[in-house]
Amino acid sequence: MLYFIGIGLNDEKDISVKGLEVVKGADVVYLESYTSKLACSVEKLEEFYGQKIILADRELVEQKADETILKDAKTKNVAFLVIGDVFGATTHIELMMRAKKDGIKVKIIHNASILSAVGVVGLELYKYGKVTSIPFENKDVRAPVEVVLENQKNGLHSLVLLDLRPEQDKFMTINTALEFLVEKGLDSELSVVGCAGIGSDAPEIRFGKIKEIISAEFTKFPQCLIIPGKLHFMEEEALEFWKQ
Amino acid sequence: MLYFIGIGLNDEKDISVKGLEVVKGADVVYLESYTSKLACSVEKLEEFYGQKIILADRELVEQKADETILKDAKTKNVAFLVIGDVFGATTHIELMMRAKKDGIKVKIIHNASILSAVGVVGLELYKYGKVTSIPFENKDVRAPVEVVLENQKNGLHSLVLLDLRPEQDKFMTINTALEFLVEKGLDSELSVVGCAGIGSDAPEIRFGKIKEIISAEFTKFPQCLIIPGKLHFMEEEALEFWKQ
Image (cartoon, rainbow over all chains, first blue to last red; front, side):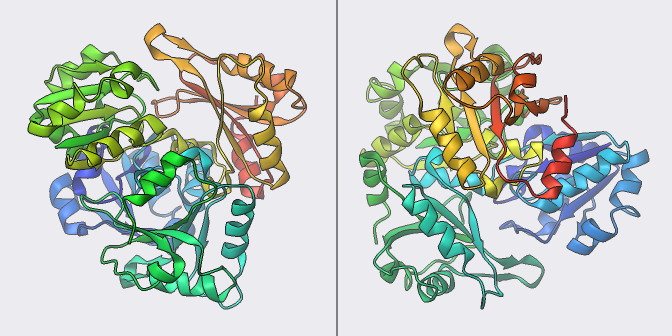
């Protein structure tokens, strides 16, 4: 059996009671370690779960799953832990499909995702358009600006995720991301919400024009951006709380 | 202090460890009871949490919060439980804003939302467009069809949520929803994914043309629909798993 278990956005206690029961009873526990990072250490997770954790990097999940995760799951109870919710990234859907093709039983235990956690900002979740992300290698990349402009045209909010390399402790900052967006043609007079540490006890949320937020200070990671679309008066009121 | 705590999508054990600790230590526990419903009873929640739960209907939250939730939160630790994640509905954002204006400290504990849990279907979460919903009173409603067509034009997937009245145990079915969409002009040759009981141990997911899924059997609730946009080959492959 292969359990896909979301472990939430911040620390060891964000796992659900159901997820924790499965992890405690599992024969093998993997943690996907390349698409996000918690605010606590892997040692802290191991201590709280009472289990040894095997870190699964991209190579292990995408190229060596046959000899590791999938092989184990044929005879044992395997917990595959994912930060946030389970299927935020294509790489996890692929692993589920490979497991199903191999006749392995799959169960899923969901958890919080940045996609709904940004609701805390006060913009209606139903009024977001396509999600976009800014990669570190972005010299020839213009897609994020195009997605934002298309969403704006349709009156929709844009969630912009920022690249990260958890294994190198490297996270793109809001400041860098805004410089990129302006350089690629986004108007620095546009309003933006900068978010850091969403899911933590004290998320950092700041609202202002791009030219203001571009030099604002954020200390937590990961960080992301929201470019508001057409605003309902209640959304306007909510954004006032985060004004610079 | 007012804690907004998401309790997930299915049963009493979907609450996070962090959320459970807060609920157990709270002086008063409210459960928002009008926007969704779990697969377990309120009694089951009370037993597992070791707390008496006050059901908060729309009137209490939107008109009587001053004399109840907000009044309590000024002097006590109040847990306000929301099914799914915390800010899926405008009504919760409004309550948070009122609390902040009253000078009440607010903390948020996130959980799984249908918005990311539909990732289980295998369609990329970043490629969804605007979310829409079908209300019970829909004689003059055409917005859901317009949203789906607009998303389709942009190659994006559409999540369609279906109305519910948890207090009357009344849930719109996929079948009724598809009849509505076809009546309002959606082509019955279009592909659709019907989802019931997402977040449960055995979600019901079926993929086919609208004219096929319109008579398919689904037994769990709540139910929702996904109209796929432009498909990547891996998404096509994923959908094959759910073929009728």
